[in-house]
Amino acid sequence: MAVSAKTEFDVDAPASLIMEILLDIDSLPQWSDAHKSAEVLSTHPDGTPDRVHIVAGLSGISDEQTLAYTWTENSCTWDLVEGKQLSQQHGVYRLTPDGDKTHVEFELEVDLKIKLPGLIVKRGQKAAVETAKKGLIAEAKRRSAA
Image (cartoon, rainbow, N blue to C red; front, side, top):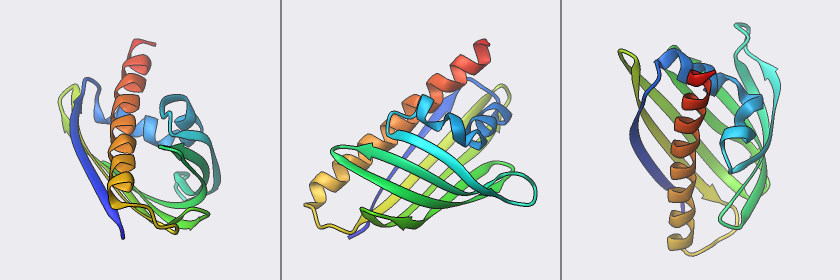
């Protein structure tokens, strides 16, 4: 059973900086507590990450995953290619520029290979979304101050 979670929030940084953070796959473990490692395996012709290998863990579930990324000027989308614990994952960040600020929509949908009670999976999804929100805001603040 796939579960999804969504959040929307504002960041005191321009969309270009938020997109720079999202494109910097190697820095993902530095600002997202859920990610233990992240490595770009291949890039699109324009140099943006295409296939990415990550090791992630949250709420007692850890996984190694290969993800396929697609990019637009104001969005970052990924889908699971292969995972040990997940049978499906779809995530997206949508950025709406607002002067020196950015409105961010973040959605994450996953389906586990192993069956756990829906409440546990949903709680894990909510934690993942909140972790991403807090981490992205903190990293934008850190990079803005640098």
